[in-house]
Length: 160
Image 1 (spheres, rainbow, N blue to C red):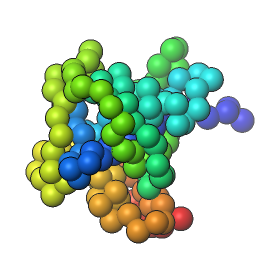
Image 2 (image 1 turned 90 degrees about the vertical axis):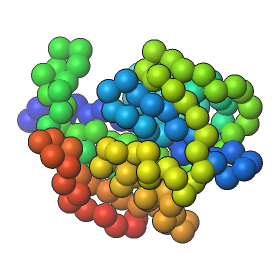
Image 3 (image 1 turned 30 degrees about the vertical axis):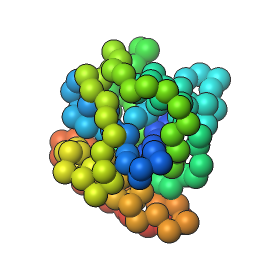
Image 4 (image 1 turned 90 degrees about the horizontal axis):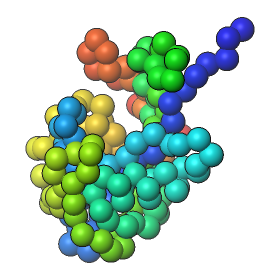
């Protein structure tokens, strides 16, 4: 049996004191809430904090896990691995601590958006599903399973 290779990511929906949400505009994926791959030897909480800082310039406090998602489609691999069977994403609610918005190598814009306008900006179906999990968060973690290629297909949506 070949051991599977997974990509693990951590992302944060960041809320400020005005109830606005932090979004970053990626070069290829449009508007998203910030996040990215967990590095070797890094824990999930540190990864969320680092990714948000790198992509937006702000520091956050990580509060709660609101969603776990699995992209079970076959994805392009890395570091000599041809394909990655599953991406596992952990999404956290975060609060703004301090820092000034900026851009990065990964994004061309960052901004605060009113919560009820966020879905007007996010176009990627998987990111929309994950943001809806945040909007519907009632204290229970949402589990989503989907594929993104060749087109988005939501397979499972349930509380865990």
